[in-house]
Length: 444
Image 1 (spheres, rainbow, N blue to C red):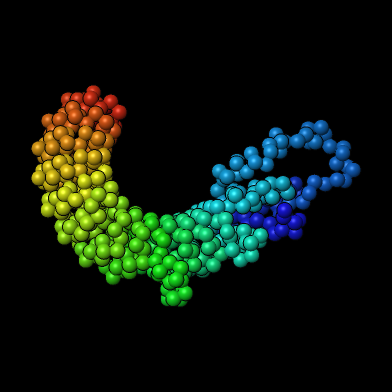
Image 2: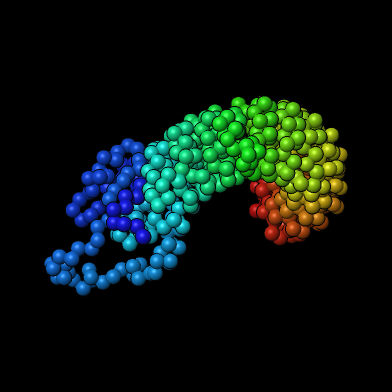
């Protein structure tokens, strides 16, 4: 049971928000909030007044609000749907709401958004309050999402690393002020971290343990990091050497996204396949130095690989597709948009070996024609999503073959393709749930 001297919650205010109204004007404790979002500390709400004059209030004023009749467990369930800042506001309503809002079950996740929020201070105040019952550590906190909070710095991440040993998920996408050292602190002090999103953090070039952690924690987890999901999209300065370090430390990876990591080459993928043999989803879209040799390395994942994105990797041809088709027979999703070296032969290899394919994007592949679509239609009956955007060699005949065999098709993109209205209507008749994206003004 919390005592009455418990510090009040941190309140996350948007810019220029007025203070809490108490019937006599704005609270002085929040009147200084101008121009930025900050975390503020307030005393707990007072108990109900017992002055005799209160008894003269009207019957309407004395009636209990309907929401106050709800039991505690129902209130907690309602509060569980609120974002962090709104939950803090609810804690200011009355003493009962204050105690309910700080129930540990509601604080498994902290979610803060906004470019102007002073997120470093907000995290410090929130973690301090959550550490009250368990000094110095937040044992209940498992998820922190501060994506898009551009004012987040290494100081904020260090607060998380020090206070949240049970952290399992961290999302800091778009927070371009954080560095390698701060990320190293988090993965070293949060041994249970499984999900890490640092997409758009241009200063992050590697994921590794700190030197101290490598020595101290080696008996605990053999210098390995437990991360399974890692998103490093738009980490432009990531190179093969950094990827080598990541692979050596994060051997349990199952989901890895390296979109637009333009310095990655086939050599980096070779390192990755040496250590990370359990990858199910991999994206190297827009990594222009990845070629067929990289596809040969990725094919070593064999049947474990289910999702692969190689969009706009212009050095990949039918040879690379053949490696994937031969060894990754359980592939479900392939995005090869913009790989102009892929032809009908590559689509044939893919269709005959990856028969469980559900989603395929071969848009902007000008060498793919109706012949390739026929191979798809006769082998990949479970196909649900197909993108042929800007495929100049595709005609209505190829679409009709697909529609006649792939009844479960749900999305078809034929924008900028020379396809007749009759062909589109044929698709609609045979694939009734299919959403067709097109640029033919005569079809609606």
